[in-house]
Amino acid sequence: MHEGSSALALVLGGDPALYAIVALSLVVSVSATLLAAVVGLPLGALLALVRFPGRTFIVVIVNAFMGLPPVVVGLAVYLLLSRSGPLGTLGLLFTPKAMVIAQALLVMPILAALTRQTIEDLWAEYRDELTAMRIGPLARVMTLLWDARFSLTTTMLAGFGRAAAEVGTVMIVGGNIDGFTRTMTTAIALETSKGDLPLALGLGLILISLIVLVNAAAWGVRRAGEIRAG
Amino acid sequence: MRPPVSDLPLVFDGVSALARDVTLVRGVSLQVDAGAPTVLVGPNGAGKSTLIRLAMGLVAPTSGRITWGGRAETDGQRRAMVFQRPVMLRRSVAGNIGYALHAGGIARAARRERVADLLAQAGLAHLAGRPARRLSGGEQQRLALARALARDPEVLFLDEPTASLDPAATKAVEDILRAIAQSGVKLVMATHDLGQARRLAGEIVFMLRGSVREQSGAERFFTAPATPEGAAFIRGDLVI
Image (tube, rainbow over all chains, first blue to last red; front, side, top):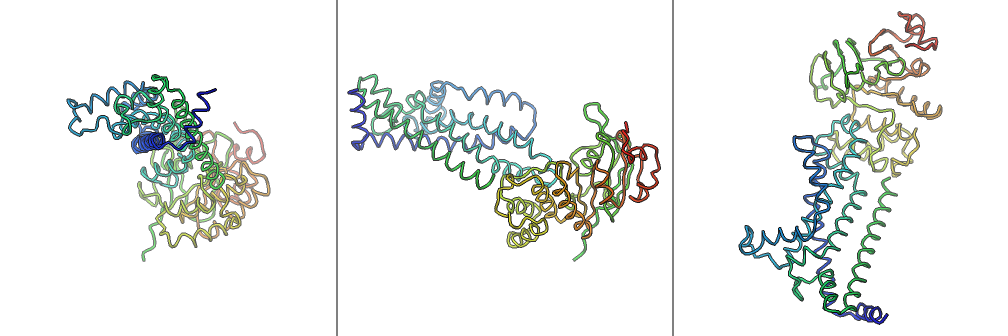
């Protein structure tokens, strides 16, 4: 009980260090989700609409990668960005940018796999109509992505949820540096190991509240859109 | 401005189509000319829908040849189709028509007026802002007609357009079809509803088991069918 009330006091107390951690976490997770969407959404649409040799193999891999272990992704990105790695000269390791890249890699297969399924289902419904209207391949993709926008909102939320709740990847490539790469999840892990349970709990409360808030807002937008567009 | 080159006559020359070793249509030779509506009749499984889908390029022939105005290849921009259960895009009623106009290359400035015209023609002006997927079956079919007309087609194919509708909605669709036909658009429609064929057809194509058995003027087909199967079909007998 004592930890709980201390946690609440910390959350409501307006500690700038705590809010800096929250802000960084949000920036990293939202950026990673958007970056993953730039690749994942078109890739999902491509896998849904284009038949080519090896497609089934790629679909299986993308689906399997939805369950990628975060620490493995962290390790791979660490090796890429470390000073002796192929991208070491960029100097990105232990920076928020490295965390965005790592989280984007983690989220991208989720977005691609769920987008593929959504677009494939919608294409089965739209195929004859769009073909009869002589809609070209690129316009088809744009039409399907637009008409699937409400389902894809949920897909994006799933990606954001994965990014926001993730700890292993950002710990490895970010280094959990105080005031620079410390996020809510890495701070929770650190404070718990140090025995500072009120701070860990407080951050946990904020993290859950944010995820609920983002999902509620997205649900509201989706519902309003569905009522308007059908 | 030169008038666009006509896509008619539409000619099927010995066309067959198979799907997974099942013959859908077999050796169909048929010519469809401009003029009064051509209605394909026949029992379920006769190949009516397949013939329309072949014409629209939704199914590829396994043998034979289809030509349009004497040409094997055209851009197909002056053909449109309405399905038995049309797919409504996840947009408003006006948005569905706007989409078709955009796809047909109509400039944004001209779209608003054209959308209003087409909605009025389909009797849907009062529903312009409503989500298309929330319309009734009859309203959706009228919207599908308006959307097809947005392409300014020379030929409009219809695959059992009123099969899922009640009589009032069927009448509303048929009234629009008559107006479309009178405006000079060639209608080619599949139906298993003989009453509808009598009401709308100028020409009848009677199909059975994937083949064309008769092609004649509607009045002649209904008064003096050329085949015993055609006569049996008109009597309402089961034709197998």
